[in-house]
Length: 314
Image 1 (spheres, rainbow, N blue to C red):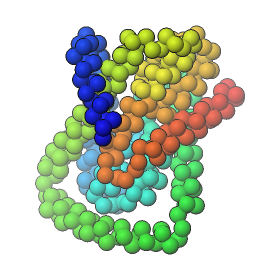
Image 2 (image 1 turned 90 degrees about the horizontal axis):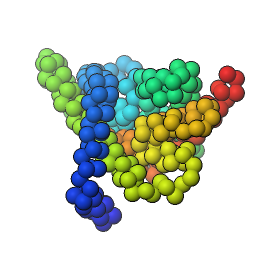
Image 3 (image 1 turned 30 degrees about the horizontal axis):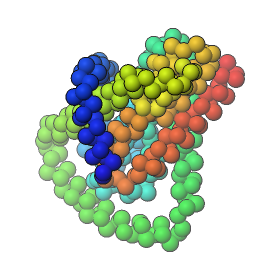
């Protein structure tokens, strides 16, 4: 808490001392959000929220639903759905940890269009990044689900299920009552989905602006001048914000295949900005920041391995 207070005060002071950078960062962040993120995610967020409210997970396996929606909409759709499921009592923390291990991915529009065709100037590169990204997510899910199964003893698993079942049953009854009372008023459900989508996208906007400011501040301060290699500077930027990092990687003089590998890692890791957005959506789920960081690092490494294999045969 003291660290967070110090960082918040430091951020306020820096914005007062460097208003030009703060204003420019906010303008760039809002432009990025309004031009790319909002039109890409808002329809998905509304639609998925509406379907979730109507109980689509009663008809589809949760894992399939989470992965499909995460692939179609991109970050942070998977985290948003998992967080809602935990808060509604539909799943417990253990199930949430399993789902997030493969249910946090970027969307094909960003991978194929923005990174592949836009930044790297190659549709083939976008396809390699996208295929590697999604296979890497599934491999990460297999790894973490397997580790979770080995770590849990049969007795503890039984105890957790029993403790969860009572709470879940109560909340599912409440959900059933809610649905019976609201099924005749679909417009009200749809309105709730719109409000929930706008709230989630507001959180995304705040993180984009914040990390755009941090990235610009690091650039302005000259801290990156300590590193001679442009690729290292780009990776540092991407560690904070993946879009900025991928754009920086595309402008370096590195070999084309190296650019593909670096971009694959960055979009799979997501950057601290995406991780922060996802953790906000996962509030109350019991998933720790440490666990999620481990998942995303593993996702980045696994995706790079798949990309390397793909490039070997191309």
